[in-house]
Amino acid sequence: MADAETGRVAVVPKERTRTVEYLVASLQERISDGEFEVGSWIRQERLATEYGVSRMPIREALHRLQALGVVELIANRGAQVKLPSFRDMAETFEVRGVLEGHAAYLAASHSTQKDIDSLRAACASFFEAVTEAEKGAAGSPRPHWYSANSQFHGTVISAAGNTQLSLSIEALHHRMPRNLTWAALGADPRLLAANAAEHVRIADAIEGRDGVLARELTIEHSVHARELIERHLAKS
Image (cartoon, rainbow, N blue to C red; front, side, top):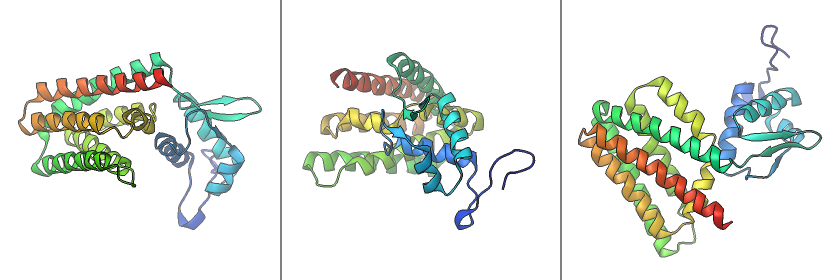
């Protein structure tokens, strides 16, 4: 049934309302995690069946994702997951680095001991990923790295205490598939160790209440991530 004011289709499978906003957030997360790989096609019919909704909210969600630069809608073919251009990537990382740097600057002043403990726990998880990669474990170190990365940056942003800053950073993160960064790291112990060390230095600066250093290190971290991805794509 469509809402009289918004025109949105309200469906409640398993007692959970599936709105267009939910579909956008869910699809962004799945694309970011690499479930829908860059260049792959997203079929409206399949999604409508999977989410238990009509094609109308799916279509609107895909249009919103196109506006965000995540997919490209092609007539008579569907939605294709979009690989950011080198220029888009450079611009996204530049802005994201500045915003995350400011979040680190604020976190250095506002973080609690609980925040610091969370950053340290995330750093430990980064090094667990390094150990798994060094051992060539059958289980990919990716889950540890994903979890650590999400916890670390999420803690910094939360500790900053600025809602608008958080929303802006989140929007930029969805412009860059998370699995692209992981693909660039390639489970290489050396690259993972360098990545982990960068996070430790940021955590040290935040715990030491040195906001200027925390900001500088976070911006450098973003630059390194961009360079890593660009080298990876150049080899592909």
